[in-house]
Amino acid sequence: MKFKRGEILVLVTLVGVILLLFFLLGGVGYVYRTVDGWITAWRYRNNPPSEAVFVPQQGVENGAPGFPQFATQAPAVETEGFLPTIAAAETTPVEVLPARVLLQGVTYTDQHGKWNYCAPANLVMALSYWGVEMTREEAAAGLKPYEEDKNVNPGEMVDFVVANTNLRALLRMGGTVNLLKQLTAAGYPVLVETGVVIRDVSTGQLNWAGHYMLVVGYDDANEEFITRDSYYSPPDYPLDFPVSYTELRDQWRGFNGAFLVLFPAEHEGHLWSVLGGYADEQYAMQQAFQHALDELQALSGEDQFLAAYNYAETLLAMGDAASAASAFDEAFRLYADLDPAQRPWRILWYRAAPYDAYYRMARYHDVINLATTTIESTPKPYLEESWTWRGMAYAALGETEKARADFEQALAYHAGCAPALAGLAQLP
Image (tube, rainbow, N blue to C red):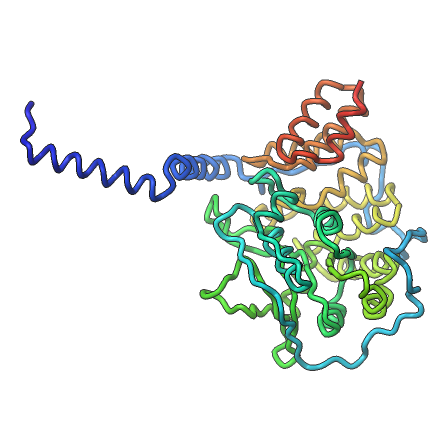
């Protein structure tokens, strides 16, 4: 079959246009991302993470009680406060607050065009307020060296700030709406980690996920906080993105009221006076404990599960690993009773405290089963925490080669992961 000259010209032009579009859209990378997205969505549909349920065995076998049988007072555990230069009893929080506050000087940064960039994007916004200019890519290089790492926890952000800037960072749990107002009114933006329901890019479905936002003010007239949200970006959304007091409080439940404040060293005394009792880490834990206990008795469904998780996590932070492990058993029972559509199935991506509690109680098989459930129900299990904890449990059981493989997998997903490196170094 012979082609006429004109037909050949049309064919060459068509091929050229296709190639041009191919490269304009990102070439091989675009094709890879598109196909990878299709495969990931298919895996989610055929192996829904919400249907995977962890059933603790060792706690049940040992007759461990659930949280309703625990005492309603927090354990008396002494903990060292963070830079305790001012005792909590000597602090005087601001009692009369202005009706509206909006802090200026934050350089807005969005998270778009990158995968799971809300942590580096929000951190560089917080840094910019104090005059530290950094790109989100520079922050991500330290926070999540593997591009598709699914989580940056607040402790990693603290370490990054201390190691890479001249600022200090304070992390506490059990925050309240009034405390956020106190801090912003005193001139401190606050990073909060929340659980939000957003559309999953892989499946198109609405799911619960962790998300950071930077609180830069509030408005009592509208009963809402003013935030810089890296996801809800201008011009489609207002720069002063509003979140109602009630909505933020409910979203905050997903992360036990955790909040992070950056500050220059010379502001230490002033910040402590604003924090009041929260200057003492033990005080913050006690507030978190009481709040979780109150919510356990008042809430139901997904919210009660999150309250149970918070309760257990706080017990662990206070040093009561035995009660924490039992409380996590009860939390996972509540999780199993939820409708799969209501399960916050990503929670182990962000909050690894159950591994820690079970490991401290030598419940190594439960650590392994929980980690395996999490890993196998995630199409892309880029979760260095789960791999590390499973490796530690295998090592404790003397299964050296399995432990080594898990530690190496954790390091493949997060180069320099200190717990994985330590675990690997201790293997025979």
